[in-house]
Image 1 (spheres, rainbow, N blue to C red):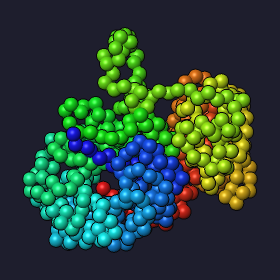
Image 2: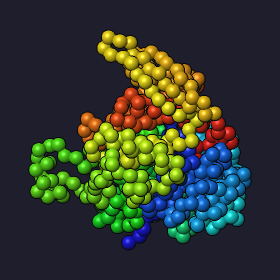
Image 3: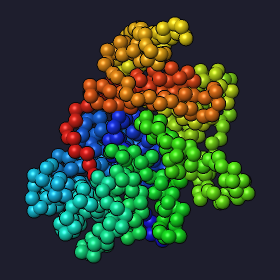
Length: 513
């Protein structure tokens, strides 16, 4: 049975989703979880884009063991050199070179002829090959490229030394049968393609990323490029959990294997959701809250008799055991630390202390604490670790007949504590107003949603916001048993992401495949 390699681009293409701005520590934590998930390749980032992205990719290359570590680069010498500098310490590094090939991209973005494109692709692959034998090439916007010219570029890239050729559906334009025909045509016209790995990178603009990826596997693709929870540019990427479970569940039809540790899927999904601030909709396939829930009486009866009546996947195989950790308000730091170690978290002394203090506060308010509660606390601490602004205290006054008013005490980047107050239409509006005054950042709340980490009236409130700062959109997330406090934390988290991005010195706006 052939193996299909799972290439994860959550940290590169996934982070390009509007409002996401992960710091190096958050990226490293996600990369370590992807290693536990046992993906084959982690695309750690696009090193040329900023100093911060370069440092994050370098840390991942130095610390994460197991998967291949890839870095993206345009077919430009400076990009390729920078990519290699970032990943050279990895056990199995890969340089992923890309170049646009469609008529519309060549005309309006590159202003280059077909001959110039082929020459640049060959030069890029050869330069990457000078650093490592593990080179991937992507003709960006391949599905809108003339098929014969695409064959020419693919043939030239293989002859130049590419060991993986990726065919991206960059704008999510193609349909499954059409994609199969294109890939079959490539195999027919470029015999050398049989000697390398054919990969596909499908976007979800028409909701077909997973379907297109599965169709590609049917005709010979042996690598699929994915993102956890399907996050990414515009409508996102091919969802890792969906394509993996489709290949696992319907192995009888596709007759291929994937070696992903599916028991880590649910936890990986939660971690990415918590750190990016992008919630998973309840009806999301595989990892949504309703994916393994049954409300219909007929369905419930059937599942009670035999799970297979209405469930095609075993929830435990995806990691939905959902056990309770045996910790409470009398538990000590040693027990708390040991439990975190079992869950796979490695925290510094200061981070552990802050997380333990949050845990003790929660233990005073909740009788039972679940692993999901702990994951939410840890993710919240990761989001706020090293932040520019830190919420020290929030005091609220209000009622049905009293104007809501909030006083926020915020620690500045210099360590000074600033106190400001504001009134608002409600408690949350007042809290956000006080934070705006304290930070001096002109942030405007665009969207607000609140959910619960677990069930019950004492559950942690999980608030996600999107905030406009100087015309750019940033996502923030915060958790607390108090919804107003969670909202304030989420709002300040979005401001910190905006500040963090403002400090980046970006060298290119090229989005990648």
